[in-house]
Length: 147
Image (tube, rainbow, N blue to C red):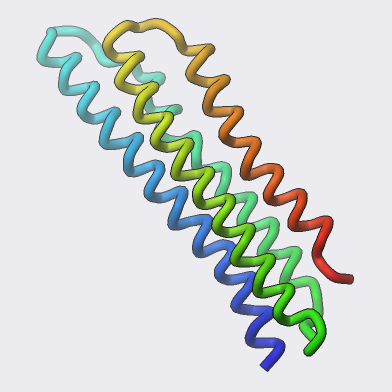
């Protein structure tokens, strides 16, 4: 039973992180499509930099994968199985929410960039700050994995 809980923790980490990232990228891609439409209607070329805002959350799936692999490297025992499950779910939620938030911020960046053509450095900095939440979740989870 403890092996099942350990595997669930690692699997849920990647699954939850991936789901949040996917929702964030969906939000950003939808905004990019709408911004491109407005640009075309105004007879302007849409800024291709919007594609990078859509892809920003994707790196956070890698963090979920790294945590998953780290959790898989631990043999589950009756003493640590619940901990492995909790760490996986907690890390997955933190990384997933960060990916979702980054996608929503990327959506706002797409809208603003298409309308003004300015502010790229500010948008990237804001997305980077949001990314740090996922990095912290990954690192803090990894340092607390039982040996």
